[in-house]
Image (cartoon, rainbow, N blue to C red; front, side, top):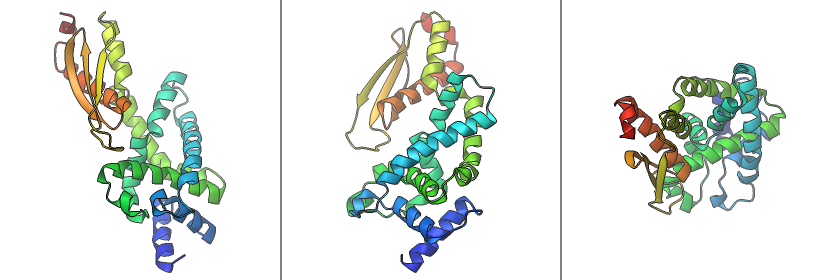
Length: 241
């Protein structure tokens, strides 16, 4: 490996966890995790991303079991979904400025709409690289626990911001209004476009909010969260009229 690349990756690893003992095997794994498929290189992030997905889910489950043992199983599932989401991964990657270390092919370099997806994939692959090189979860927990704590605290304080569809459904059914209706359309076919889908949510034919997202699911969640915010600022029971 080029000495300048080795120094760059060493600095990155130290920033995510100063306790990690850095050796050539770890540097090689991290370099692979930060090499995108678009480069055409045989050693790329694909398999490490696949492994990182499984490692992340198990590590997040351990975090919940250690720090939120009082939560019901359903609430644990909802929390874990946030702690392993693409948006969460992209935020963690952004905090590391992972874009600056990611090797991309020409096509991927020009696709600005895919930046969030690239950050998420690289962060997940980096998790897989650490597990492969170190053989345990401890460094992963040291790195990710502060991020998990912040997300868990925010989600438990304002759950509708993270699982708006469930919260809106519970509210509407509690008011005897039936289920919310979501009308979602695809506005572009560009993968990773944060405004690829637009969703309008209504209850009893009264439109409450509109929002966009990278996927149908994200657009619907965003629309539900926006609807709840609108309802909080109005006389919500009047929706039935």
